[in-house]
Length: 430
Image (cartoon, rainbow, N blue to C red; front, side, top):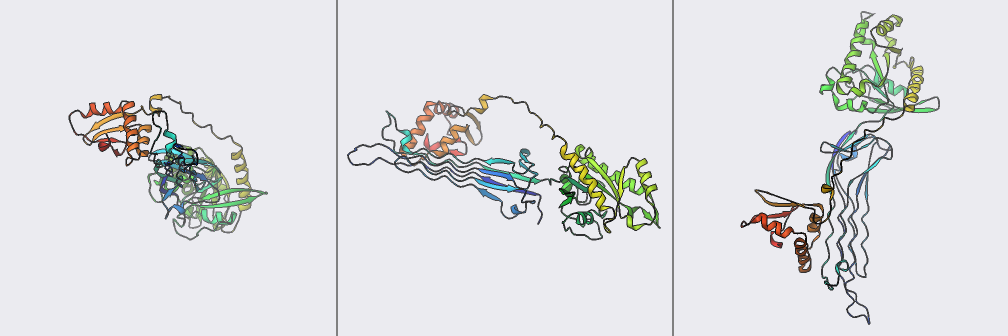
């Protein structure tokens, strides 16, 4: 089943805990600490892979977690790093966290890391010093980062076939490619976009059959912008007009075709100015429904600013071979155009916000208590094993050295306000 949007939760692997171990060898008394560090947790990566064309895999599986790091061991053996987790999505997938776009995986092989793994905890060998010769504690592994991200697929195709419902888009794509879309004589037969690979003159290109648009589609009416977004990725547009709509008692009313054309163009421009600027080929479909020459009708449309390239009959294959060759020329021209330069954002350096030293923290106070934030101090708190007296003494020593204990006392005053470092309450550890 085709799915073009999904929300998933990704979590980096938890780092392995450090090891508490002592060197024990014959003839070497008081060998000292030799506990190794834990391995780092794996990260979560998302990669664009052209072997998949839908996000339907995320309909049932919505939680992804990378492998945890292994714990350290004695004899200064470090734990194994957790394996990274690779998630594949179709090219053209936008990755968002809230309203922020993390990445735009537009092409095959594009990749981004969306969640980092936690750092492995230090073993007790890491803490030995001239003043701490027998460290009897180690760090716990740091939890990996958890994020809730939204995936949004915008199909990548060379040609997007557009038009009102039932103009023959699905029929055309079934004729010029191997795609087998659902075809029936009623509006909105196509409920999902269809991709087809067209072969022409020893070359291939991709066409996308976008579900029928109607007036006020840009405002969400009908199938609305559920499918308008897919046209944004197309290199050029094939705009189909339905001759049957203009036939009245065997006579052709060109004004109906002109109005149909304007309806679609209005919706494209209202949804995105970029769509209105795309190269467009206009064709009249269902030419088999009349024996009259369409030259005068085409001339009337051209005079109204609707430049018709051809009249075809997708049902009888009339004119479709020539149309494919015309589309190939347009595709090659579009591919030859240089890709637009990415918009350069001026970088503003904020070293005070990027500081990751232990002393880089901030304190705020509200009705729930005193809240301390800072990347390194939060990491220390998460990785401290408070059940170990040695680890607790180290934690208090760090708070003293960076002046955080005095700062907490000033904020607390004579109250018994709760104190949090990140999400962890540290009242009982002060």
